[in-house]
Amino acid sequence: MNRDLLLRQFRPTWLGRILECHEALASTNDRARELLDELGPEANGTVVFAGEQTGGRGRLGRSWQSRRGLGLACSVALWIERSPGGLPPLQLAGSLAALLALRETAGVHGKLKWPNDVLLDGKKVCGVLVESRFLGEAPAGLVVGIGVNLLHEVEDFPLELRTTATSVFLASRRRVAPDTFAASLLRALGPLVEEGLANPPSLVAQASPHWIHEMGSPLVLAVGSGSFRGTFAGVAPDGALLLDVDGQRRTVHDGEVVRVRPPGAGADDPS
Ligand code: BT5
Image (cartoon, rainbow, N blue to C red):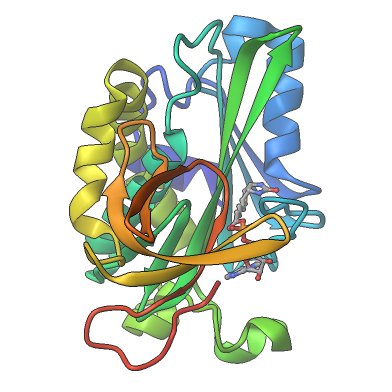
């Protein structure tokens, strides 16, 4: 990531006043969290990029693969002192910003998969990990981490991801430079985070046309060690999945959609 090139295309606001670009880090989320610890409220809006992560994280103890120079690993530190009624659904700000940047920089139309993935052609091109920081009982900071595959050829992915992962290049044949994508991502992200903090239901409404799940379509959800089937009934104003199971509406905050039939596609999409 070339910081100068990025700053020619993105003008920092509250977002990006502090902007770090590292060649490699264990995890950009860890660095953003460190800055929240060190700087407190001053760290609000700090953005951290790394060209490579040696310990990139996904949700629930999973890992995120980011190879040097091929993708984007970005984290934004937010200072949130209290959050009445739970944490805002900022994973949607991250995935929606990535979806808009895909459209702007490569002309491709992604889909969102609950809760945090962006898919191109039914394969995962971006994942978002939101981690919160607590002081005692109260939230005192959030980190929104976004990983995007930009320039990968199929062989650049580990074997186990080759059928489920894709990159902007594979989906569009366009080689979008990391600084160009990063600028587009940050331009979209600022207003979406503001919206998510001020008016969560409005952010959820902005995301709603982009879900890969169709209303009433069957899906399988893994929660903990079990799984159950239901039909998609939308996303609640706080970002929870609404699922109809045996005639009962369930609200699911944590879990994994493991099977869904995208409109018009014959195959299941990746988990
Ligand atoms: C995610 O978790 O998708 C969240 C990924 C967040 C990554 C960003 S990069 C910047 C910041 N710093 C971090 O350390 N993390 C964040 P989850 O929904 O749990 O999906 C993880 C699963 O996605 C893995 O178990 C793999 O199956 C798959 N996966 C891993 N790397 C991938 C990649 N590069 N492309 C597509 N799929 C991948």
